[in-house]
Amino acid sequence: MSITIVITGTSSGIGFALAEYFGKKGHRVFGLSRKEVPSNFFKTIPTDITDHSQILRAISEILKSEK
Image (cartoon, rainbow, N blue to C red):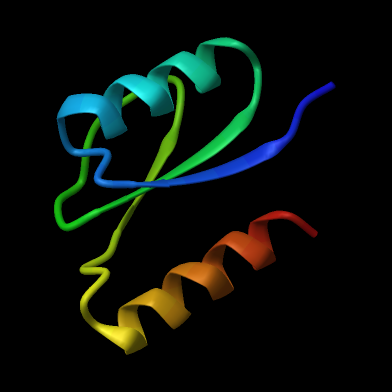
């Protein structure tokens, strides 16, 4: 069973490792980070999570792609 997962801080460290791990397991993963991160296992949505409008934009993008 595949689930959709949203992870913040995916540009490096544990956020990146978790996004790669769950993506490799076949889940649909969206990574939120301030910079674009190339990966074959998750989609990056450039987002500064301290900016409310960027969070709303990211949520909207995720919901549109889930239809």
